[in-house]
Image (cartoon, rainbow, N blue to C red):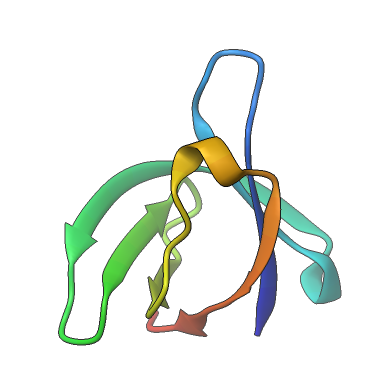
Length: 67
C-alpha cells in the first residue's frame, strides 16, 4: 500500500494512509527481514523495504502491513 511519511511539528515521524484516511504517529522502529518495521500508535505494523532518510520527508513510499 502507498503511505506518506512526514515529520510533525514536534519532530515525530507520522504515517498517513490515504485509502484508510488514517494518520498515526510512529511509536516504535525495529529491523525486519526485508527492511524497517514501524509500529503505529493504533497498533498497526508496517514494513518498509526502502525507508527514506528523515531529511527527504515528506515522501510517499510503498509499505506492507504486517498486523
